[in-house]
Image (cartoon, rainbow, N blue to C red; front, side, top):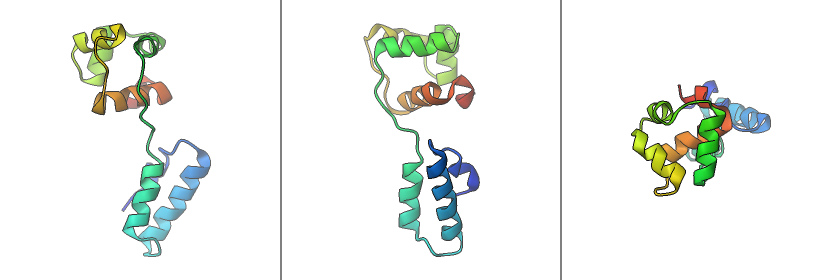
Length: 110
């Protein structure tokens, strides 16, 4: 069962309202689990690949050093350096966190 807090993660206020309504309907048994999963998926923050210059600009926007940024993302400092130079590309949870920081700021993952 989803909570109201989950609906607040939706990127648009309209989608958040629809999700909140669906959650209420799910709670009383009028929306099934499968349909509720679809609503939950709609409210997730999109994960898009990021170019090296985007990662550097994001870190600079947040006014943190590579070691501090690495600490927030729970990766090694050399990973940030390699991402910013284009030697490696972030993926999985790291890419998800970068997208959250891009959308909502570093405080979203603090």
